[in-house]
Length: 92
Image 1: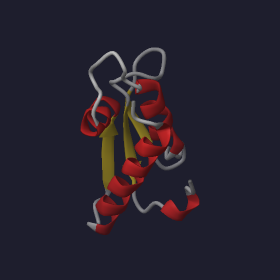
Image 2: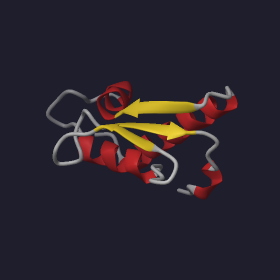
Image 3: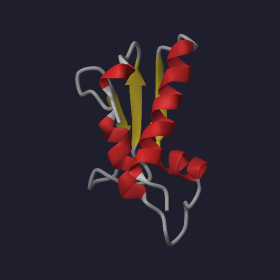
């Protein structure tokens, strides 16, 4: 099972790369992120941990939730992270 820390590390790397490429934003979808790291779909998936990691980097004043299921967390959760973003503010 993929851990929250693994999700966070992958998200932070993706954000750093996108920002270095001078992109205006990066959208990350929970289903795609989890599939990228493996174990989704499957019986041992960790979508709640994936969504928590996505929300860890979410800034309500800067970023946007593009899509989310009625309960808030699920594979359809998609967040648009707008740049610039000070990634050093997210230690772990």
